[in-house]
Length: 234
Image 1 (cartoon, rainbow, N blue to C red):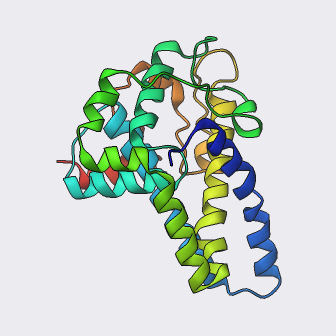
Image 2 (image 1 turned 90 degrees about the vertical axis):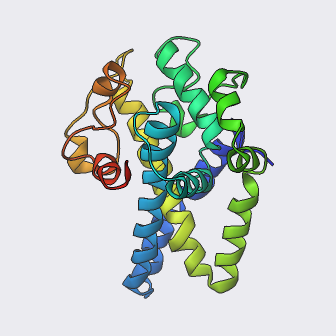
C-alpha cells in the first residue's frame, strides 16, 4: 500500500475541492472553530515536509531527536507526498537533474493539474540509508494505512472533522505546492519569488537560494520552517 505518483495526483484532485467545500460549510453555519483543526493539520504537514522530508531527511542539514524524526515522517506520509524514503530520493534526483527532461519533478502547472512526478528507480544510497530504520521502512511500504485509518477515524467522530481536520488542509497543501512548482521553476531554472512569502506564507519561495545552498536549513526570517528548526535542532 505505497503512495505512488498516480495516487498523489488523484489525492490532489480529490482534496483541493475540499477547500471551497469547507468555505461553503462555514457560510452555511458551521462553527468557525472548525478552522482550528484545519490550521493545526496544515501546519503539521507543512512542517513535516519542509523541515522533515526536505531539510532533514533529504539534505541532512540539521539533526533533532528521534521523536521529532518519527513525528515528521508520519505527517509527511499523511500529506500524501509519499514516504520520506521516496520523497528524499526524488528530491535529491531533482537537485541533480533540475529543469531537464530527466528531472523527476514535473515542473510548471502540470505539477498540480496533471501529474506531480515521473516514475523513478528507487535504488540509491539515500533509499538504502533511510530503509535501515524500521519506522521509515514500514511507512514506506504501508503508507496508505495511516492515511486511511486517520480518515476513517475522523469520519467516525464527525464528517466535519474529516473535512476541516484533514481533507481541506491537505487540499490547500496540494494547491500551495503546485503554485510553488509553477512559480519557482517557470523560466527553465529555479527562481526566488519572495513576495509569495506574504501572499502564500508557509511555502519555500526562495528556491534559487536553496538550489545554490542546499545544505542550509535557514531560508530567511519569513520562513516558518526555519523558525521551527531553530527550536528543535540539536
